[in-house]
Amino acid sequence: MLLGSATDITAVLLVIVALFAILDFGAFFTSANLINILINASLLIVMGVGATFVLITGGVDLSVGSVLVFSGVIAGKVMIAMGPQGWGASIVGVVVAMLAGAVWGAINGIVITKLRVPPLITTLGSFGAAMGLAQIVTNGNDLKDVPNELIDTLGVGRFVGLPWLVWVALLVALVGGLILALTRYGRRTYAIGSNAEAARRAGMNVDRHLISVYTVAGLLAGLAGIMSYAQFGSTTLSGHGTDNLAVIAAVVIGGTSLFGGVGTMFGTLVGTMIPAVLANGLVIVGLNSFWRDFAVGVVLVAAVYLDQLRRRSRTRR
Image (cartoon, rainbow, N blue to C red; front, side):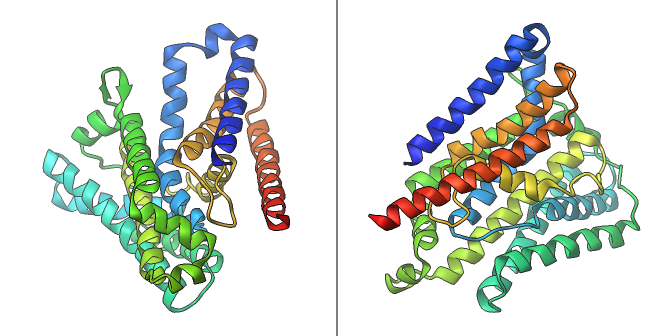
C-alpha cells in the first residue's frame, strides 16, 4: 500500500512537471529554474522529515514555523554577541539554532506525554509562545547581522552545481528515510502510530519515544531556522506564519496518514516538491500563484479522504 501511495504521488508530480514543460518549456525546464524550485523546497523538506516521524506516531506539530523563527533569533543573538563575523560564530550559530529547536521540541513532547495535553493543543500553544518569545527578544525587529562565512556557504554557496541548502535538505531526507525504514527506532515509530497501547504492552517506552520524536522535529525546525537566516540574511519574523500548515500538507500529500502508522520519507520528499513546482510553474505561465494554495488544499483534502477509505477497507476485512 505504501508503495502504491508513493507511486501515485510521484505520478502526480511528473504530470505537473510535464504540464508546465508543455506550457512553457523554455522558461520552466531550465537548470536554473529547477534549482530554484529545489531551493524553495529545501526548508520545507527539512521540517517535513521531522513532521513525518511525528505524524506516523499519530501526533501533530503545528509549532515548526515559529520554532524555526525562534531558533534563528537565538542563534542570531549568540552570533552577534560573539562578533558578527568568522567561522567560529557561524558554527556556534548552527549548533545553537539546532539546540534551541530541540529544547522546544522536547518541551512539546514532555507536555504531551507527561501532562497529557493533546498534541494539537500543545503545539498550537507552542506556535504562539515561540513566536511571541522571538518578538520579545528582538523587539519585533529582524536581526540582520549574519556572518559572511555563513551566507557565502550555507546561504548562497554551491557544491558541484547544487546549492548547499539543497544538499543539506537532501542529506536530512536521506538520513531520516534510512532511520525510518531500516532501524529499530523507525519500527517503533510505526508501531506506536499503529497502536500505542499494544506498543506499551510489548515493552516499549512509548512516552520516551514520543518525546524523542518531538525533539527531533524541533531540532530540524532549528536547522531550518539557521538555513533561513543564512539564505535571506535576516530572521524573517513574519515570513513563516503558514509553514506549519505547508509542512503538514506536504507530508500528508506524500502519503503519511494523519491517523498514524503509515508513511514514507520518499513520499514526504515528493509531497514537498508538489507545492514548490506549482508555485514556480504558475508564475512562469502567468497565472496568480495563489492558485497553488487552492490546488494544495484540494489535494490535501483528497489525500485524507482516500486515506480514510483505505482505513475503512482494512477494518471491514
